[in-house]
Length: 182
Image (cartoon, rainbow, N blue to C red):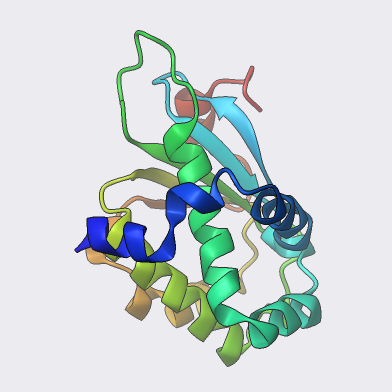
């Protein structure tokens, strides 16, 4: 099923298309994400500054072309899958996501936004299974629990078990990532 989906969506073509690559770079600014390198286990690390998102801009981007937004998300997944790993990597497939929630507020509690990101999570479960090693939610305000309740029905239980929430920077993150990567 995933092989057919990849062919139908032309994932490999998008990953070499200059126009799509430029759109993905712009998406990094919209969603405030970037790739930090690899952690102590050789897994790619991405940080996303969720608390700094401009919710109206994200909602506009998803409204204009939700399929393109999904494909841009898939490109970010592909970048992490294709990142060069150390020869002695202990995890050849896993990825680590750090979601920095500093600045998170009630404006992030949009049902439409939850639906969009629920669709992304569903796509990830179908076509990028077993790629997530950890999601570290850092600088999480109390409000995060409400946001987590909105997205948890869309997440696979195994994936949700890999989510680590902390109001600061957890020692577990530093042990996994290493201070050099941060």
